[in-house]
Image (cartoon, rainbow, N blue to C red; front, side, top):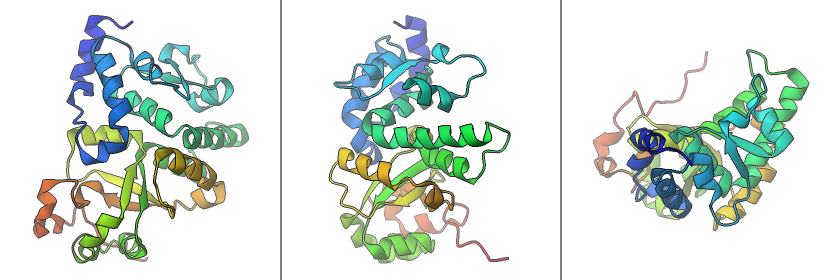
Length: 258
């Protein structure tokens, strides 16, 4: 069990600041609140998460990772996820609990790339895409006009002209770094969104689909669209004002062709 001092440091570093009623945390609320409560009561993060009913993954303390061994390779070889006592790894473990198949697939692809090319100072396009999605990804199930406007970065159409269509859409955040950033939400927080052309009726349904969809050739092309998540209708009170979207530093236009 973590000491009282450790639990206090964890609480100060953000676990106690998670606003579980935030709309983007709806899929994570039930397991997340229970785990956060256990952390604040004194448990280390890996133990607090591991206590989830029928936990589909084995979380271990960071000290279990041998010095000099690649993190992804260790997970692939042992099936265990090294977990530090911080907010970043709290969310990583939470995503492992909710999306075990997709997380295993990401790890498998990372381990295969490491085996083929080594760790190296440069990841390469596939590992870059895997890391980007793992850290900052989100999944959008939405009517085609919304996706088209998002890809085009036509923010006025996406968030104002097509605003009623958002009632038919569902955005699920996947990246643990993304979830961490939103604990102290700011307008510029941007997800890299992957199109989920299925009805996302449950996380289990979505997990199985995503594990199959994560294919190297497709991922290497980085098929993600940037989305400032606080622009999503209903996710942030300030976006009820049209001028919220008149910020070119956040809602950037398409990149100019060279």
